[in-house]
Length: 464
Ligand code: ARG
Image (cartoon, rainbow, N blue to C red; front, side, top):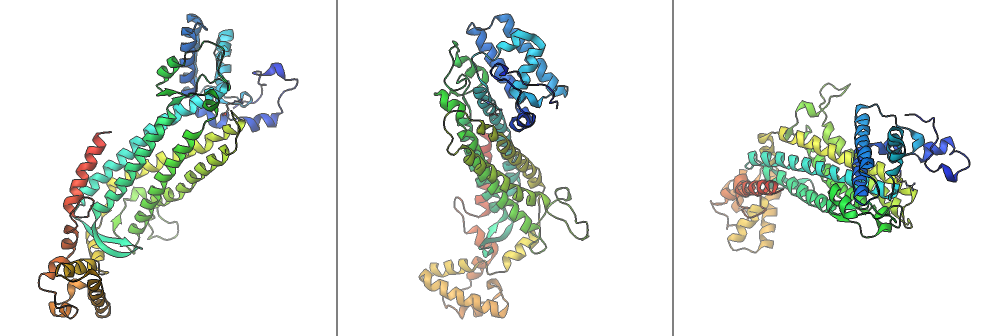
């Protein structure tokens, strides 16, 4: 990136060049150059509209558009000379256009300002990012549905307080994550609506004296609506904050998901195996296989929360309309979008490759008195009040702890010591299968319900 020249864009007003350090300090081109495609898209739409409005001739419009396309090709070929002294992506591209076509290039900026230009660029950029992220969420959800279907009947302990609570099916557990991701998807779709509004035409802050036709640029750029107030149009960054809020919730979900994968791959749980390609070893301990991908996603969650609080702090107390502060919106926003997209991508690749260890899960569910609630429910069905049943089963569990037996391992005589209401039929409810099959309602853990939920999930994804 070269720094040798002096920015002439506002030369008329100034009697000395900008200090070299200040030029670097105030420049954003190092990070906002990634907006180049959307910047050019916005400029092409603007030039098209200016011709229709009678501000540019057809020939001028055509020269501008053809040369903007060539500039895009230069950028993509890596031959474009990005200049820090030209401050940002907008002025770099405009200066190059003027290099190429002289006075006609200088006409492009008629009736607009970098203030509405940058606000337009970020919205166009974020709209595309959201679409990619939505695609990754769907891909991850597809993976979850496939695994949930295969594991609809696999039994594992369900936890509260990370203590064994009741048996659940692994498929059911996987579908809890599916639900979270469905809400994340909805939040992003909703945020996209408010992102997809066009500030172009707000100009610097008050609108412009040229006979611009904002409906034309709006339609060309595929925006859903035109921003209704020019002061708000150039200074609103709510959409970026909203995106970071939705991204933070999604990352919070992924971090919980990550934590469970980390626990489950540990030697203490051993519920699942992750393929080697998602793990790394240790340079000193030969036995180690570390679940790096989930650990890193768990860690990266923090930077997305940081982007959200950073943007809120950036906007707090800013007077209308545009302030240079707003240039600081980009790095956190870019980082949040990159982090969420990459994390989802890693998960979408990894989830279908999970190898559940069904026997280990089952063994774990057999320990820890996971069917104690089922025994209490059984006694309720025999006519006892639930509180008394809770107490009776509590005694049985205490006996089990002392004698080293789970409930299903006790004889009928042993069980009857705690209640004479207990009969031969009790063993059906004390089995893991009896326990999960009994929770047979919408949202319950019974394998039949898991299969039904997978079907509903497939229909949801097909409707997107
Ligand atoms: N690079 C600037 C930004 O990102 C573009 C807008 C500059 N506008 C201005 N009036 N200095 O916010």
